[in-house]
Amino acid sequence: MSKTAILIDDDGDDLEFLAEAIKSVDNSVKCITYLYCDEALNLISTDTSNLPNYIFIDINMPRLDGQECLRQLRKNPNLDGVTITMLSTSMTPVVAKNLKEDGADFTFQKPNKFAEYQYILENIL
Image 1 (cartoon, one colour):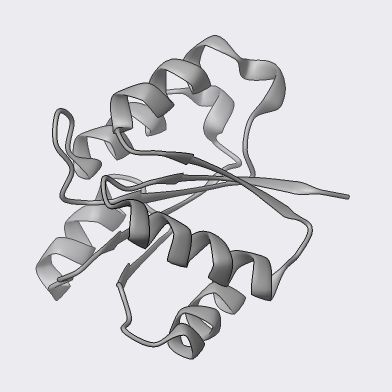
Image 2 (spheres, one colour):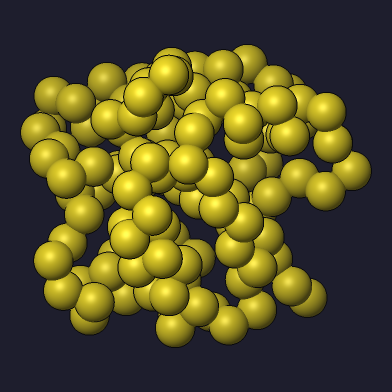
């Protein structure tokens, strides 16, 4: 059975890197990418027939930051079963704790090596 992951990051290279890492861990996951949180929120709130299995959100985003995006997603009861992961170039323990309190299932600092991405994603997927 195929799964869907929504990836939200304003850096196109980071989006591509994450999508490649996900595919390398589980080739059945279809990745849908967005550069802005508000665009993803609009799609998710209007199309509840194709909800994702996973949502990955960068914290530092223009227009609507990742933490506020997380809060809005967690207000939607249709997404209760969706795994939401927050990631960032820098992830302090305090930030990770706050994100978990807001409803993140996982948090991680973006690794520099592909193998590290794969290792992290194996635990999420």
